[in-house]
Length: 192
Image (cartoon, rainbow, N blue to C red; front, side, top):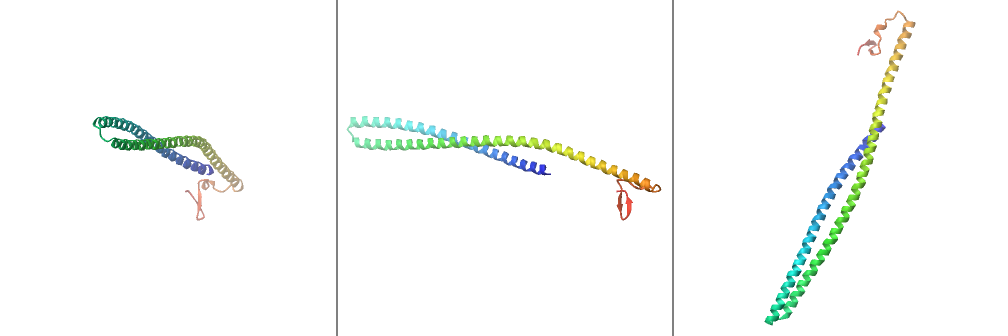
């Protein structure tokens, strides 16, 4: 009975751990997906930054050439260059932020992997314990059946000895009305 309760408790623990492992695997997949999306976004931001820089540089160069040739005001170009530089700095800051996010996701993914390994190890240990307990249970069930059989044999043997004693003490009594299978109901011996 104690082993059955212990086995039941360990079985519930094992089911909980299996549920936790499935949940952690789902979280790991989600983190991996988010990590990959961040890497793609980071790459696109880098490309956009480079394209913007090159386009802006070309535009500024063309504008400078044009302004110099035409004699227009250089101050407008300086203002535009400052604005473009500000945008480039802003894009660079966003890029740094995305890299940090990327590192955070990678760290969370590594922690999730470690937790998953620990949970898998715990499941393996519990599975081994479960096999041992199931083996013990089979042995205990066999021992229990053997003890019940021995008890029944002892009881039947005792009943037979009692009938032999009755035969010796009261030889005239009809023992055909007596059996280990009969019951006494309302003061009469009856078959069940």
